[in-house]
Image 1: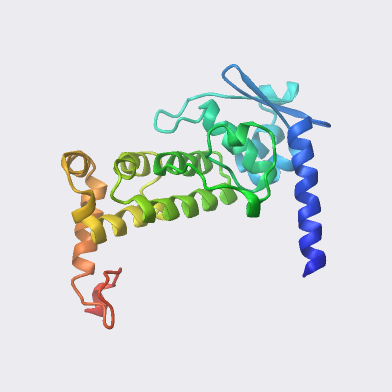
Image 2: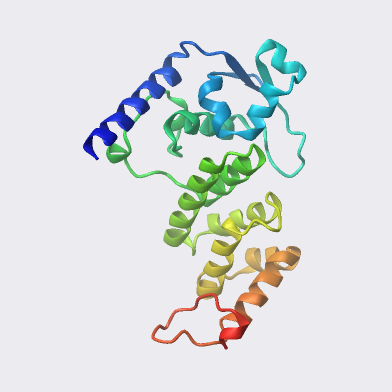
Length: 236
């Protein structure tokens, strides 16, 4: 196990050098006025979108350039700040939301990082970006971070602000962040109520339906526990 850990650490250090120096970069991702020199061998295996862009002869591929545009009205697919986090993830299998952390090209080992200035909004946006560019690893990381920060600040306005993002920027079939939102609201409605949340519920039919379904599903008492949880109707 120790040898494996050392190998993984060595690989991450190599990736970090490539991230910081751009040595051997063979692809440029362009986002507005920002250019990101990257390595196909690193980014393409992690993103089906980028694989297809390089493989199937898009006009940008002949120049080894991919221009990201906000062609999707629901997802800010060409937001430089979010793309900076995405590029950082490719090389570190994580992203940081400290101010400027993912863009300073200085790798900090996970065990030595300070607390993140995390925002549910940022993680919801990163989840949407990961879904749009088909980056499964980033999607899981964003879901994990969103869940962790929501547990700490479900009473905060930033959680409420993240809800429309969750419901507008991912497919209805994608339950990753939606289940977190619904469970949090169902269990903590007294903490996060208010005009802002009420307006969101009224405007977001899918959320209203999910909350109704959650309330019905939790009508069955959870034996041995005072907390609510998801139940199937057959369990009643």
